[in-house]
Image 1 (cartoon, rainbow, N blue to C red):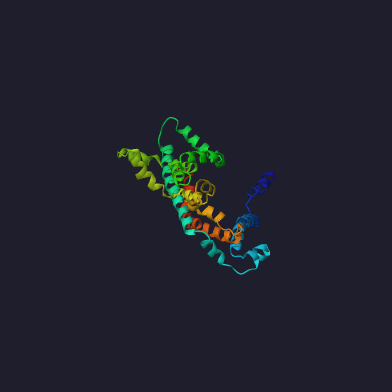
Image 2 (image 1 turned 120 degrees about the vertical axis):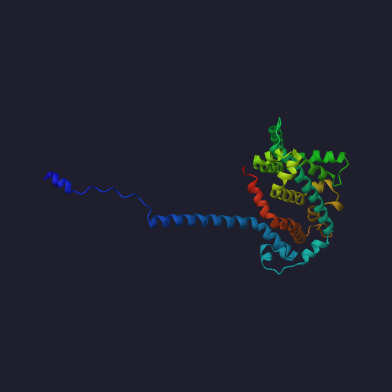
Length: 304
């Protein structure tokens, strides 16, 4: 009987495995949506904080001096006063100063891009004793503040008789830029070694490899270097104010010091309008080239 009862007793079934039910999945989705909402709120707040100065200068450029004197209330309730932009263009020789800025920016952009690309290729592909040490020295110069070299730079160019000319910008362009050298070096390092070996087998020397193989692949980085060099020079105030005369200075110096009333006081609304006109070329260049700019920022840091 005992054996028969044991045979008729059902076997114990194992406990079911734990599975996430619909309620838990809904809770996980809700947490993810909440986290995304917090991220978007943070992005919107950051955009608002960064955009407040730009919004303020736009409102100032469209206000009259009387409205500006009333503060925020005067700027929020007014009719656009477009005469400020006319005055900003006519009170100084705006086209001449803009042309000076374009010339200096192009000099720096072309020379710096060419030299930095060549040096970056050398650090990335050429083998030699002391290469890493020289690269470390180049990168270390990025930590030297520019204000520390201001007086020696002026003394040097003054003794060479270059104050008041564009020759300092030519020399700066021929010297390259440590950051751009690093950018090109990272990009050229990421290119597969097989391309270089194939070019060597075909009988190419290093210059032919550089111009025929590597530079065509570096178009995004070349464009990025050109944009960065152009904006750095276009936005530079200190060097033109120190090394150039007012008749051949750049637009940055002219817009900062050229809008004055008969008593020598600054015209804030006209200065704001001049600043908007001054910013437009750089903004337009970036908007047209941002796709290549972002692409090179990603590809230059990835080693293939």
